[in-house]
Image (cartoon, rainbow, N blue to C red; front, side):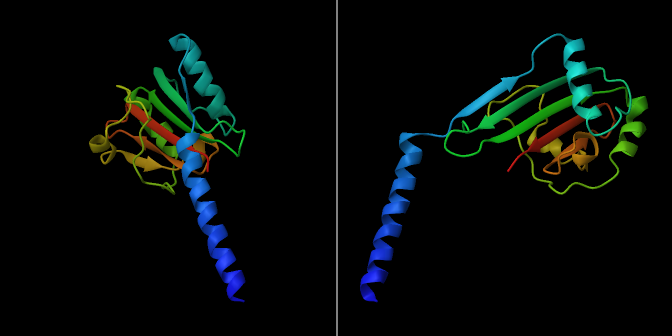
Length: 160
């Protein structure tokens, strides 16, 4: 019995050591896909994304987006992080609020790996009114935050 316990501890220690050094030798790969195209193309892109879950509540003035992929999918699945800033006319804010009526499952601030000027700051995040992502984006991980004046909507979704 003692042999098996000792063998188990040795194998466990070796496994942890391999796992630790594997991450150092083969660091996690991050791929960043940023927005491309004209303002019209960016707006059409986000409208297609939203239409998969329902109607787009109103016209969109402009958007900025960024998707990050953690991992390469070769030795296991990859995780994806999607950051979006949507600019709308504040007069249409109520239409968006009605389309996002539920509170979020997640309320933790997140930001892109590389800083972008258009993403909400950690301080300003606490002033956002938060909603669930599934209402417009069909995903239940993340949050949608609307600025108090109703002019800007921030979206953070991720896979796990």
